[in-house]
Length: 599
Image 1 (cartoon, rainbow, N blue to C red):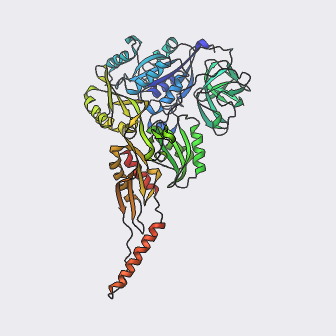
Image 2 (spheres, rainbow, N blue to C red; image 1 turned 135 degrees about the horizontal axis):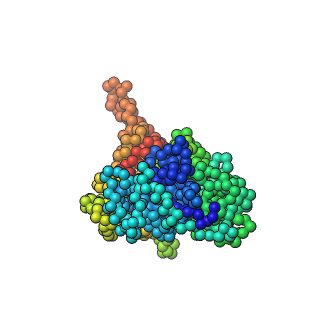
Image 3 (tube, rainbow, N blue to C red; image 1 turned 60 degrees about the vertical axis):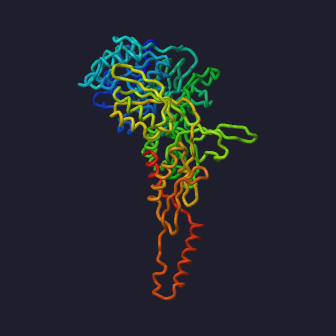
């Protein structure tokens, strides 16, 4: 097909504004899916996506409409998966911006719109769910015009569920989105925007052809890794994988080239021909920065080998997921993992357990911090701390720094006071307040990421009765009054329970953690001391009472010195046992402490 008849576009929106439903309607309208095979959220094939009703991975599908080939990429809407959105935008020339007529502009609407504008895409604004009785179509259009700066006539009104206005939207795609640019006869340049793993065929590489063409038996090279492979198959998504003779400039499709190791693939890399190694690499993507960290350890009958295999396979099509091996005194060997947010962490854990049949123990999530330390000769250096046990000695620390994010909150004016109060209690710094319509306001704050990583979103929904939404972007690290909270059990530090927290939170959090541990750790023959410490100072303590054996029960009367001798012998035995005894911490204790940290 001629490049003039190709259109590459994506659908972007806030979560639950109707992206996947609109994609379903495109599939049916263009005949890509037979009505007998169709099911709602057709492109959300992952079990977790269907259960949660959200899109986790971007999906690509080639649609035939009249004389045009429309390459659609459906994208996630949650803030934790904005990296998936940015990857999709790099493979497109246009974007359909979907806004729910019952909710109006939301935080991720603004965030995804900014990503699309920065990528230079043509925007088609759409108001969805106009069929609902409480839809506020006119006010939603006013908000879109206010934030995009377009004309009211350019905003299309549709119902993805009923198909109202979808024909007009499909007709607008070839008219308002430009065709791809590039030379069909030039040297091959293909952008890798995603990948997945097939048990029998190896890595399936998702590509957008910028220039040139690629076909079966071509020998290709990955620019970043240098790996050279022979192409076994090229194809497009219809939405199932369909082999074709070649992929040409402007096409979106896949390449299978017997790639067996994940180290040979890097999202954002450039595919070129082995015969043209001087072909310049495409810009690619900005590397995702993990903001939340936790550790996974084997639980139940799961082995480290099983976890390693599962993690490596899952990381293949999730470039934002990072991992490295660690070893804990309390839990043994495990993996230290990085995520974009808490939802991302939950999804990774569920996918590991479901797709690979393993069981993992997850430690309390932490964000990454920086610490300035004084070295030899008075030299100062900055260390990156992504889990508490790596923190240096308190005496060498000059300054702690915590990550600050630029937080945007979209809400109705009636909840401004309660939301501002919530932000203030989480150490937020007010930046600005901006109205984008008669009934919509954007509050902007700079806030420590550690303050929003646990329960801020839930509390925001509570104080705003579900009407507020949020989005955040990392700014930088700034000085803060932080401390390392250490938990000691029977005098030994449990590194898996150590946390980096603000100084004001250390004591109450330490007390709560000890109360939970006292209930969860079984009693021993000797007293077990539980302590929370900051540096060398003990800030909280709980004791687990020992089992008491009545050693003088057999003594009926007689000289008291005999009873005293038995009691002293018991006391000495407990003292000796306490010296050599080990306190085992059950996995249930770690899970209970995790819940305390989140509360």
